[in-house]
Length: 121
Image (cartoon, rainbow, N blue to C red; front, side):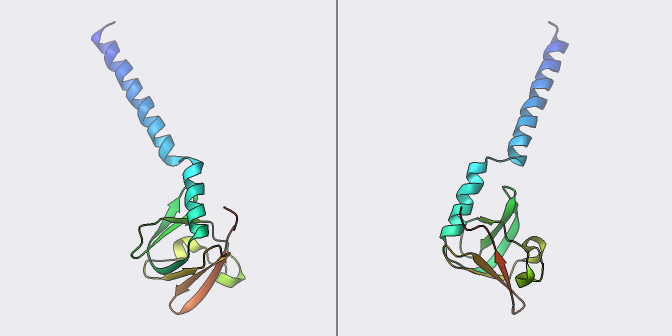
C-alpha cells in the first residue's frame, strides 16, 4: 500500500467515527430521557425558568437555583390557550408542579397556563 492509500483509509475512518458520534448526539439513548422524565414526575417544582429547549425528543427546562434538568411532554389544550410550551415558556417565567401531579402551571405576566402530561414515567 502506498502512503496515499493510508491517508484515504484514515480519512474514511475519521468520517465514519464522526458520523457515529453525530448520530449518538442526535438520537440519544432512550433510558436517559426516561430517567429524567421520572425525576420530573417525582419532584415538587416551583421556581423561575432559567433555560428551556428540546432534549431527548422532549421539552426540557431548568429552574433558578436548581441544577436539575426537567424533561416532560406538555400537552396543548384550552387550559393553556393552545400555546405550545416550547417557544412560549421563556426565561423569567415561573413554573409550579406538585410531585406526582399531572399538571404543570406556567405563570407568565400574571397569567396562568396549565399543561398536563403523561403521569406514568
